Image (cartoon, rainbow, N blue to C red; front, side, top):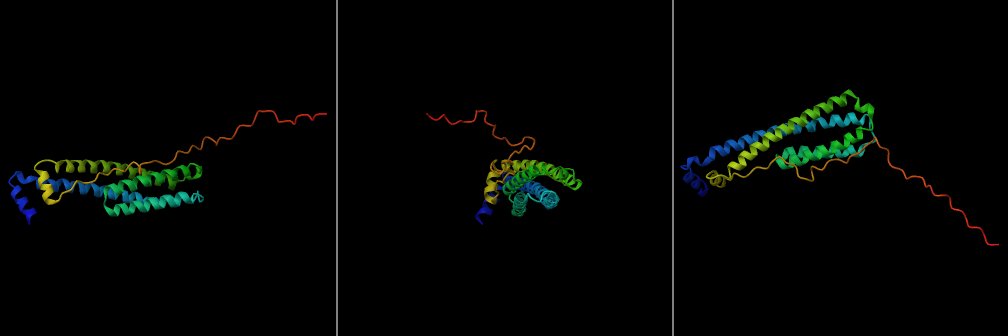
Length: 205
């Protein structure tokens, strides 16, 4: 009751920004919804990609397990509706897909497979849409967070419980990329010794 009474007392001060706070918050929620749609589409494409790769690279089971775990983590993060969790889970999936693509380099026939090429194109398109949605969301969050720090909106935010929103930004650990593997260079081998073979010293007479 006291909180709402305080809000009523604040209303004469130019509306206290209540409607503006709601509008900015709704814009951020809508932008987050677009991110979730694209993340879910990315997650939906992964099983088909893995099955296509398995047809040529049956021995990459460890990588397949990592991709499946990362996909599951992304799906769970989407269901949490937490922007930071989604960003970290998406970065983890990107890393494991990078490992999968490293494995693909060893299978030229797979790289030429039309289904694989199509799935790659779809994933690339989805990743581009995620990037656009992420920028739109972060801009909306920035506008919202900045506004609720201003006076008198900061008072209204405190009374109504409006909290700052999280950005869609992955942590440094989640952004660590996959190891670089260069298949063009064979592993180094130890150079043969150029020293003359050892001989036994002559025996004393």
